[in-house]
Length: 248
Image 1 (cartoon, rainbow, N blue to C red):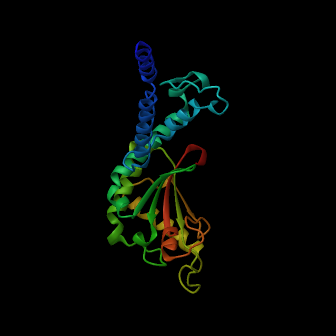
Image 2 (image 1 turned 120 degrees about the vertical axis):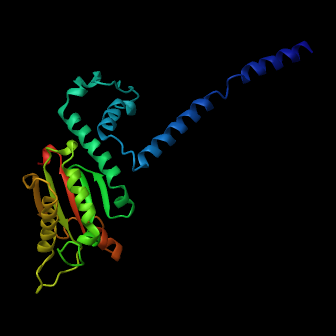
Image 3 (image 1 turned 180 degrees about the vertical axis):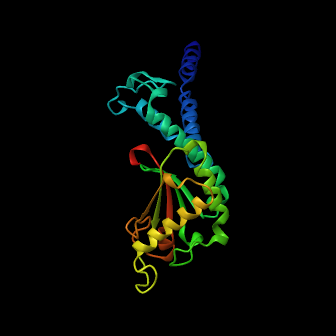
């Protein structure tokens, strides 16, 4: 009897704490879920500069050497004062501009009139070609687009991007234009669409000297190949690119 009691007590002691790892595992899963919710939320875009710093902290995990230490202001392992790095300051302001753009153009984003993203060139505001222009034309459909263009002009004068250069890029689908019409090729059509957007932005108060205008015809597709009309519609666009300093 005494031996049985000792065996049972020993088993109970071994059982204590054996499932405690589940608490840590559950915490990790919860944090991952929150991370992906934040990542997918268009109203709360991720600060790309902060992500870059976070990635630096994981250097070495592949060889089990451990990561670097991430701190506000100073990232000791990199030997830099983060708050003093020009690229970080510029990136922070561009992220602030992106958050502001997502907030101000929320109705247009929901209606798919406008798309906002950030790439190696800078902050990109894409205007849907079929909403802003007559089909196969560089004439702006002002009835549908006036409010958005006025809002865009105000945004481009906002403090976050007041000194940035801006490039307006016209893009078409691969459907040929009428060779006997006013735009014999998609090169002329895409360039004229960019110029038309510029003229209205200037009319609404933006500084013309900050702008560059380009036409790319159908050479920079978002959808390639163009299998259906929806693909062609997505390629018909005008991109307003708030340029990073390296691309000015």
